[in-house]
Length: 223
Ligand SMILES: CC(C)(COP(=O)(O)OP(=O)(O)OC[C@H]1O[C@@H](n2cnc3c(N)ncnc32)[C@H](O)[C@@H]1OP(=O)(O)O)[C@@H](O)C(=O)NCCC(=O)NCCS
Image (tube, rainbow, N blue to C red; front, top):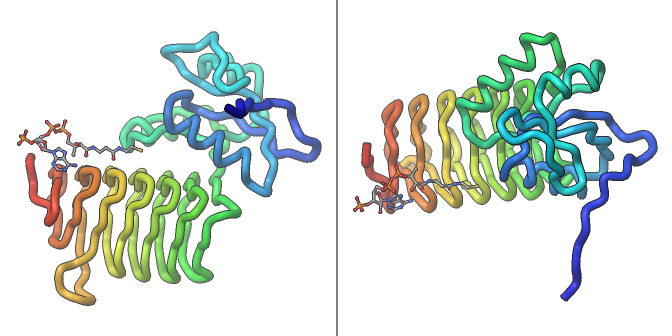
């Protein structure tokens, strides 16, 4: 058995950053930061409900403590849930602090497109040309977004999601692990409405109404 241990020693020339979140997505983000070519000096992690602990060698504290101890550091938001992420963006911005994006050097991002502020694109992701990601969008590892897709603000793509061309995902949509989305008719656009949830492993081939939860193959609404 080989034991792997994280180290929190800062690297010379690294970008200082505070991370809001200290749960599962935060661990995934730490992993991504650790194997990215750009180096990060993580000043602290924030969890308002469970501060005063260590996470993989980093100190977890409240937002107020982090603000006073790190007046200049920009922020990364490490929260998978769409609405919570949106609230945390608003909270950080209300203190006039900067939120930065993280685009893994191990992702493939098309030359023409638009990335909103505070996006996260993890390793193994693929974005074709003419793709637009809104503010605070998270693309977890190995997800793929094809030509002419639009992903709305604060939507989350879980690992290994695949979106075909001309898919429009509106704001605050959660797409579960390994879901696949493309219109049943070749080349037709498809829309996943605001606040919808797409279940793990779903195959979505028709429009999804706002607020609906869809599961299965082909995906049907359970709510
Ligand atoms: C879709 C989802 C949100 C539904 O959760 P829920 O609202 O708690 O729904 P329930 O567990 O009560 O399930 C309702 C029904 O849908 C079925 N169902 C739920 N998720 C399903 C899925 N992904 N595929 C097929 N059927 C599913 C359940 O079996 C249940 O069927 P039944 O009524 O015949 O017993 C959840 O199952 C899911 O897929 N979450 C995404 C998880 C994920 O990808 N996380 C990312 C980690 S990085």
